[in-house]
Length: 113
Length: 110
Image (tube, rainbow over all chains, first blue to last red; front, side):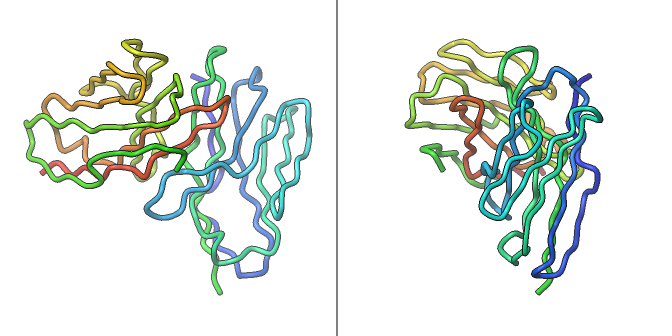
């Protein structure tokens, strides 16, 4: 069936480095994606979204890139900080036309001071 | 946490016993969801509701039932808990395309 999935379960970086978290999706009809951040002991929280009519969207220290040709998106975090340590999910909110959030497995970002 | 409260936050129960988890929202949103989160599996949808008394199955619904008699409450029931249902359970509501999650319930079945 249709799915979204992240490429790596764990990503370790040094504080101050840039982080890139990748996600692939299979539903070519998907037109909207959301990145969520889940800190330890909490539920996921919205970070940034992107629609399929865009290739790039920037937030405060985050950038999401969307490549519809290869059905791939990435979340880039600039100057990674210890507070960025969390599990990151890409989500495809569409499922058969109804917006039921479907999540990938998540990438655990570990930031070393 | 967008007005979502899950209860209990932690529970230990014995195999074969019934368990009900409660999700309460104060936002009056139509769509509510129950997910379970396990290592290596991410968030998997158990059941969802699109209104009072309107519910449907997700990808891992076996062994679970739900009820929604009021807009604000969405209950998840394990009729006879099994060890495979040890997990962290998250309730979510939906505002547009964005989901807002509760703090989670850690359920251990021994």
